[in-house]
Image (cartoon, rainbow, N blue to C red; front, side, top):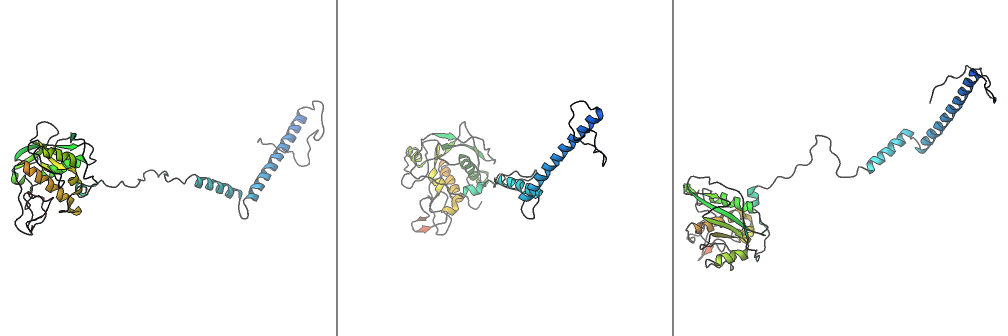
Length: 300
């Protein structure tokens, strides 16, 4: 709105209040412009007064127009800010992701598995190289996992490498050191397979694994067969609380056969069972009950 200077009190502009058919001169025209501008200003002032009065009336007792406007603003913000995905202030981190389970934690778990599963009989080598950590005779092996098992092949391969190179295993005293290779010419292939496929490969060496759903060293082939059901579920002789130890025993026992060791039974009740005892089947042989033991050299 443009500013204007009202006339001094008591002074009327010349010709004010009368219509004119001609040009009254610059003074008259200026006076008329001032009069029109004054009327327009008065009209705007009146409209503003009405609007403000309406806002005050709408706020209710004790309210103001500003409070009403702010209240509307607050309602709008509340209505549009109910999402759980609210923006965080810069620099404020979200909740920390849970830590990945450790090797020991995974090895202590049981996994669901069908004891009657027969897979496709097709294998895949676990990629990667795990070098022999010791200075004894280097034994190269490969790890194969049957397709479609739904088990962690990398975990299985880690377990084989760590178990065989443990001082309590066949690497004891620097006798040998085991190296996992993904291809080439291994001395043997440790194979994780379904119960049905395990039975097929064990039968090639005249062994029946179907009675107790066990594993075997198929000596006439390159494969040491680890029954995936036993790997996933364990055995009653060890129980669900000792899955890590059971899996170590399973590896050491079957590789022990490949290294030339036969079955040996416990001879003293209460003693540790030899690793070459068939511990999946029983810890009680001819009335002699022994304790579970996963190691060839349990004393270290």
